[in-house]
Image 1: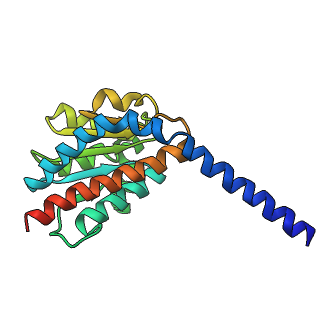
Image 2: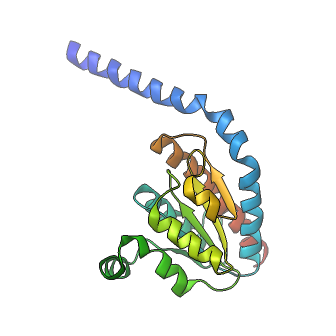
Length: 201
């Protein structure tokens, strides 16, 4: 019984510590990202209104978040809306493995962007460090070829800040905290797109 109570106390301390860790940064990160994020929201409204596509990519947890966002734009977030073109460049295993094998892992998103992007489309890159080589390459290609680019990153923006028209840099170096905040931002972006798509039905 004592061991069980001690374990429950340890778990309670872990819970309290992690909740407090997130609460402490709340005001700082919101103030830091607000203006660049609102600019990105305005661009996404335009993209959705004009029927252009959003392409989104990232690695690991960011890959999962890219897929999550695309699902909400093609499907729904809070309400029914007409489907819009949103493509996560992380989902086709045959494409990813063939590109990685034939051209190298750094090319897996760039080559897809080159194949799929059309005038007016938006490419969003996710990276907690802001330095993921394959995301940087895709953003660089897109920007060099006249496409709009956006980055959701961690503190400072990393390399992605210099190759993105919109860089939303969460002021943290902790991967878990950055990813949690990216998810909040992606949910807001999904709501922004959904409002436009609902209004145009």
